[in-house]
Image (cartoon, rainbow, N blue to C red; front, side):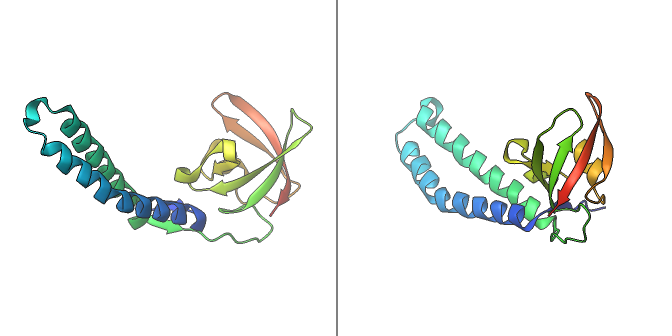
Length: 153
């Protein structure tokens, strides 16, 4: 069974951009490795060992990102008035008077500091398919809390 990774078009584009950047950097890393290799005895050549490790990390990251794209399921945001993947929501937490805005994204894109929460996180699961005005209970590891959906964009 193949597991597809859900993500927004922005998340997909971000991975494509990183792959392009890494591919552009690869020739420079290969050149550094070749220069280090020409320095002589490889068993005691720290520059060679480091350059080989760095190139290996780059190649590994490229393979990983390539698989992310291969198994990506890009979900376009659709505003049916309910919270969905790609939606931006304004939330009011029960213990706070101010509101916070989050975009619902795929697991790989989640970054709370940037206002992005995963659709399958406790918060994401609780608000998915809900409408503005709904109050839901979020079952989180640290305990349950309530949140009201003020707006779905």
